[in-house]
Image (cartoon, rainbow, N blue to C red):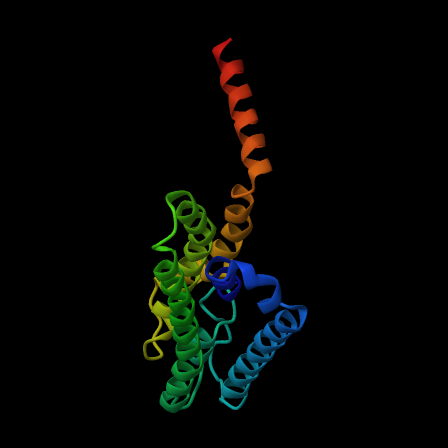
Length: 194
């Protein structure tokens, strides 16, 4: 999405050429392959760890850190690999996304006020969702394997709240949705006034 926004705002006349079906398919394949490799590496990191004792994870879902907390052996090396896998992927993805928006901001500084407003409106919703997702994920995964009580709350942000806000934020940007919401609010105000 960040690349799509970059091309749409910084190179609008070449958008259809740059964002061809082949390029879109390539982006989807790369994302799916990266996700598969990331998931497979997490699976391989945890499958060979011996577990003993209680088999209940004190978390909302089966995440890597709470799972490693149940391990019987020394998990220092695995913890470093988890940081390298999860933390590094989250950090690199976040930095790449933010760099794309820095390029966009650099490009639109010379735009007219109306175009600048439209470009910022287009990007702001995506930046909000990106920050809501990556800030808690980075807080959890760019540190040694430790569990804090706050981790459950932060996990809610990147597993439930950010995905829930994503369609809501993009829906509220839709002109038809805005007009319908105004009509509903105006009718409620008029009904309360009577």
